[in-house]
Image 1: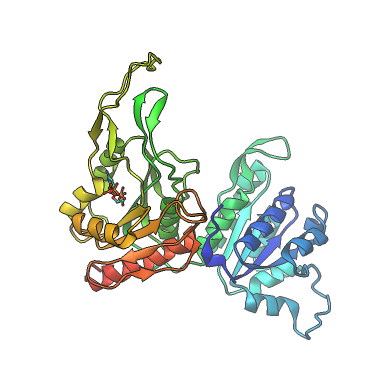
Image 2: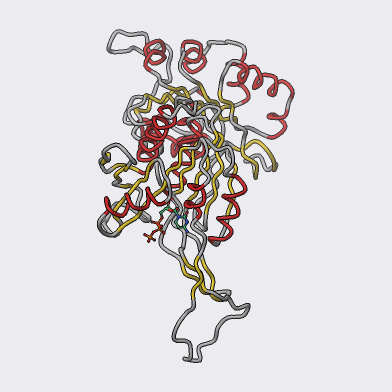
Amino acid sequence: MIFPSMLQNKRVVLGVTGGIAAYKAAYLVRLFKQAGADVRVVMTRAAERFVCPLTFEALSENPVYNDMWQDNSQGKIAHIALAKEADVLVVAPATANSIAKFANGMADDPLSTLMLAVTAPKLVAPSMNINMYENPATQANLQILAKRGFCVLAPGIGFLACGDEGKGRMPDPEIILDRTAALITEKDLGGKRVLVTAGPTREYMDPVRFISNPSSGKMGFALARACEHRGACVTLVTGPVEMDDPINMRVIRVTTALEMAAAVNEYAANQDMVFKAAAVSDYRPAAATDQKIKDSRQIETLELAANPDILFELGRKKGNTVLVGFAAETQKLEEHSAQKMQKKNLDMIVGNIVGVSDSGFGADFNTVTCFYPDTPPDRLASQSKDSVAHAVIDRALTIYRKKGYE
Ligand code: CTP
């Protein structure tokens, strides 16, 4: 899993209230910790009936705040100190009762008291029975929170612990993690349109065999997600990959290079930035058969036809778009990247050497060098694909502003 780098060294205060889904909050703490955040857990009395504080203490490696009257050894008032240090306050699961308290400014337990004192961004992940969720009182309270700037997540749909089925499940911890990162990310791509391509393409010779490459799509997905977190309106065109659709963007799933070319051509107009991270097959079998080719030991060569160079075509009719290509090379990175950048009329090309461990195809980390047409290259330290994505976007945005496209 690729963790959002924006949570690195951030203080996340997690409020856990008394719902069945409280056990899922334990996994959420782990995710926040793995993303590099410092996690402080606040529990209500009702939450303690479901999960014991020790679980959260062990996972967060910090004491749990569950008693308003508890002595704070540093002589500080605990809820005010916690409130001041919070970069974000997340409540998951958020029960109907806790939501009602937040909406009405009550302060009769550690979490509701803290809620009034926190000025950092706040997120609530509702979790309750479907009728309780749909009750006009709960809906009105959620609307109040949304109006006050809270990020209010929609509950998941499915089986509920009460036996009912429908809306009311706590959103998955992975979704809460993603939305928390989005909430604290500066919206410097607000109002911008961005197209990202990701993953490999498959070029079929018969219904069960194809030419492809090991691209996992992780770099492209990380770019799409980072652009969305920064406020862009994102279209992601992806080849076959084993990842769920990222949240809050248009996702178009394709299989072949020809399908990718058609999707890119449909959406490429009026984009502010294009990141072409897909590993497109340059060739396809000249003729694909409808039925499986049987082994008759007679086929010795496979005839190929050239696929369109999607990026080259974009470069040919480039308007006010920052065009970023990717080059995965096994040798002569600088020479090959420079050639591709010039041939495809790019503003930047992100090159990396493949075939080394912990970088490139399939890895969660990448070591890349950014090349530009008229300034020296920029070698980035090895880092997670999410932080590579943000670094690449930073550079694309600098080019965008320098060119006066704003
Ligand atoms: N690309 C594309 N369409 C293709 C081939 C590549 O849009 N048919 C894009 C890729 O998405 C990438 C860039 O071009 O951003 C470079 O891809 P790469 O395969 O490394 O370049 P090629 O020009 O195909 O060169 P080669 O395969 O000879 O290294």
